[in-house]
Image (cartoon, rainbow, N blue to C red; front, side, top):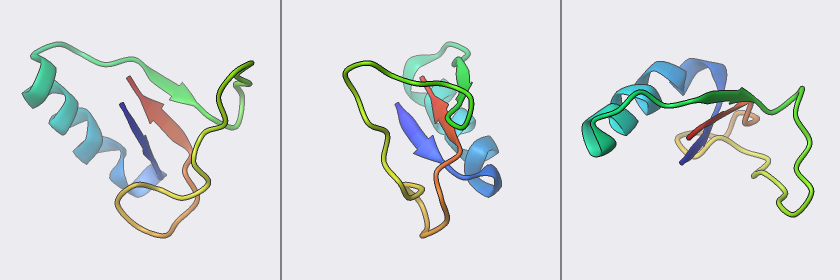
Length: 55
């Protein structure tokens, strides 16, 4: 699972496929609310705001 910005979405998808050998689901964090989880504010790969969840 990766929480990333728009600039790192392709890299995180590639990493997911390499690790799990399957296509991930991509969730727009601006349009989705989670009942029991707060997504990170910043991208895991830089200091930009996290916009997508790759899972």
